[in-house]
Length: 387
Image (cartoon, rainbow, N blue to C red; front, side, top):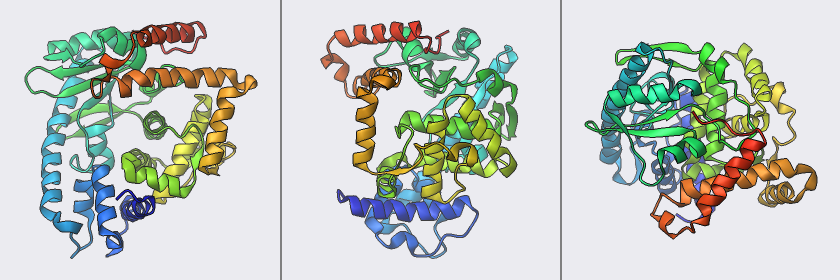
């Protein structure tokens, strides 16, 4: 399973099946079983067992006797998704009652609206976004519902400064809820127009409740920005083999969200979405992830408004590495390099620190360095202000 060629083959088979599902076509029988082991590994690493189990062609069964396990994944996903969706809709209703607009993001909201079934989109928590100026009031409303700030390592102030969110956990039900007031990284040069995101929000209604969500154009662009946060493409599209390797390692879900956001976006509005990405200074990131979804899942690629970015090219590993070295060393690009260094510094806490108790092994200077980086970014006018 460590063979990259085998992993790419399993991811390619999974992408072929999902691409047919996104387009509403019937998956080709047997295509997923050219390399059963690699296919199953790609499915499980992306936590797509429920979706694939529900979409396998007639007469086909998951490889390796996984029928029962994948069916159980669907049932567990259905129960978990309904619980999260109920909690999310109730939180949105309480926030709206208090005069605070709240957008349902990803997770069970995407499962209900984009996937058509909350069981098909894996999610472990509820993500809500509120206006930055109302974040403290929103936190008080959630605390009135029984939610309490919950993070194993970081303080509430640190979460606000570095991650632009507060993680909560319900003291009785155990539901985890992340309260966001931004979707981008605090040290990224993006300039997301959150006022427009809330002004153009649309209402979704299901039997589990109602909530606000981004309009289709914003849904697409925000999905691309979230993908860049989780899968760093640095504004360039890797070669197809590298993309399939990333997909096989568990990153495919982010591009599947983008493909499904494209499915609900009218064709005539895609140019507007591209122009919006450029206006938000996020053109390269949106173009790269839009093109990645197109390469992997066969959806339409970026329109002319984004195709002009020279960074959206198939680049091999050496070219990509050379580009990053230039980004660090080029004097004319010092601002971009500074942003990249700050991003890596913050990720040291988010990914290396809390995950396995590594925080205890990190020198105390890391915290001071983060604070200095935050102050520098604030002075440069590139920080998304915490509430």
